[in-house]
Image (cartoon, rainbow, N blue to C red; front, side, top):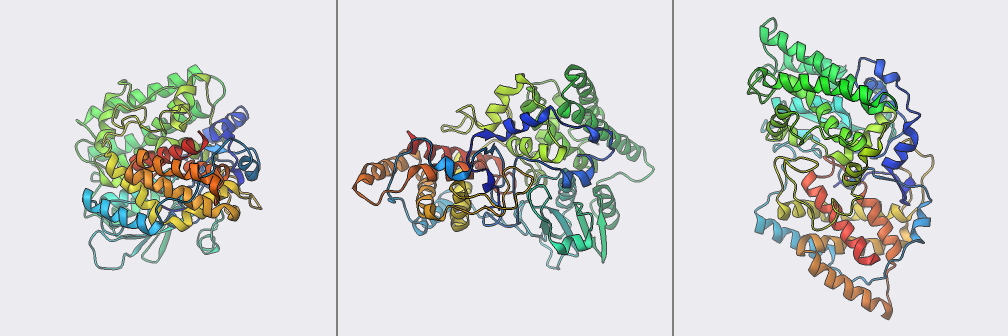
Length: 530
């Protein structure tokens, strides 16, 4: 996991990022609608003002886990520590060393091997990708630390699918942190992505993708220039820009809702039709191409944002069957699964990049479910995760393995995670950054660190042994708290909530593991508060 310097600035929970966004939505300006580059151009995407998610330094949960965003707090962190009933408890949980041993035992039981970040399937935590090649990669990709940027994602996806060896340097977007001087010395604009290859520096994702096709032709992802298939690919690239424009017009406008929806649906119908023109399931037929790499980041964000802000399902309601097939085919690709985010992350990383998104009342039920505010989607027992879920995920889930992945990330980085979570009962940093939940200068509540540490060990126990066994230990600790050595429940719950709302996908873990982690963090909060 990677604990990001995230917003301590908002650690008092009481206004969700969605609600915060809604307060701003009516004032959204649509200058970006006239621009030809996505997300108000890559430049404005990186410099855009407010947000709802976080992140910061690159690294494992020790450095970026959890820059997510769901709750934008309106009070000082310490205020939340004083509010709400929460039982005291004692430190009777397993030690981290004992938990480490239990994780190893579970790995053997489930025959799970730790991810190979250099040679294995795509993984957001990787800093070097060799694909079995023993030579030092000649290519360097600069991408955003939080995996929010759609332009970074399409280059990342192309590199993974072509299996071009490369190294990665993660750079903050300005809405959640500062860029290192070493990067702005090379790229004064701060634009992302950027690529270094053969002594040359390239910016602009379209140019980078073109260079990659020219320099690494061994696995071509575009038809031969001048061929009918090539001209069709170019036509589809133009359709992707049409889709992008129609999506933003509907997503970011506070007027002409019906007209914007109709225009968006017309373009989506075109996309759906094109997906069967060559037999599918991909845009150019049976094989994934550069066209799929270009469409993927925006289709992924469309199917997340339209239910959340407009209350309309794009994937999963049967209107676009070829789109359903396309997503299912993409989700069989390790190159895509490793770069794929979740609905929660996207709906909160879009406002800072776009300047705001406009909600309608009809979206409330879906937005509550995506945010975990429906008392079901982020609570045990979790509803099934499959292609029919509100957030479709055709690979499905393996709950035992997903819990192991989550607890492994927690245990391996527990020192950083505990300190990060303790921002939930700490102090805001200064100066603040634009993202409401990002606060790289926040100060954790060090007086509560031991209590937070104990609380997270109870969470790890629940992930390993089940909530019933963990609850027995926790309840015993509550009953014996009156005898002395009591740990305060309120600041620990504030810290656990803070952590829960900042689990980022794919940065910290895949969606199935993130669901389990969020739900088990909620389990602890419910047990202590109830």
